Length: 102
Figure 1: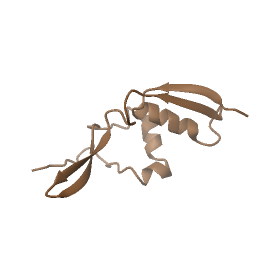
Figure 2: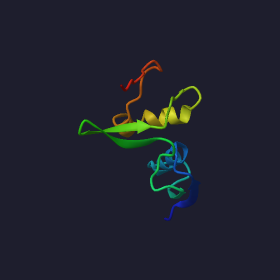
Figure 3: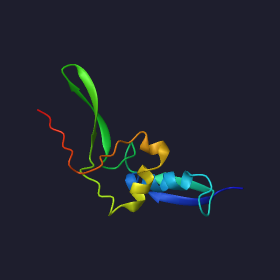
Figure 4: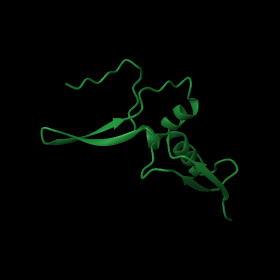
């Protein structure tokens, strides 16, 4: 049986999170046939990983997300707790971590 069709506008965290949620097996109302319309070459919205070269070494640096408050974003918090994502996305236990680049 073909999935129900849904179109998600935007490939930022909300759009990608919605797609990922609908792609899970046994999702309510599914299966889903999902199309994402996005106006950039890659997904992620403001959050990106860019290569930074320093002293001949390339280091991937994540940019764009300044902070994340779980109280305001319970759906994103639930997404980040999924085992397939949790093992790949480091999340600070508090907001006290600061990275300094000299």
